[in-house]
Image (cartoon, rainbow, N blue to C red; front, side, top):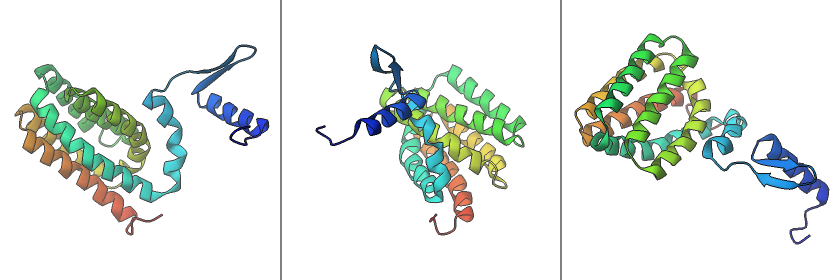
Length: 194
């Protein structure tokens, strides 16, 4: 009543949140929040990315701000075991370079490994949110001609900088990687508009 929302509108909104698994409606018991994890909240935003190419470019802007800093932190904190996992992930991506869906998964895993290696929970959560959005983006970018092969080369450069524990080189390699993919995406959307 205070917000001037009718009961049917409120019921419809609650049903939508229940469909998205954000709330659980228990008949006769009430309505409960199930989880506020970023992965759960973001997984239903695929439709937003289907609407506009400019949104993809905005995602890359956000990634250009966050990921170079994260990889620089990771260069100072990464363990030998994490480097081995990263190299194994890159080896898998080389084998999967022509399997776009599998390559996208290996790419996501590599970026998640780097975020974890930075040892900053807040930044890791930001990256978890971007990763959910990035799943949609990667479906499009891995299909662009030459992107997977260039990404493999970029990933190798990032891993080499991390192995050398060189924050400046890691930052530069990550930025170059993001710029390569963004450049190809801009060719698809020359004006950056939808």
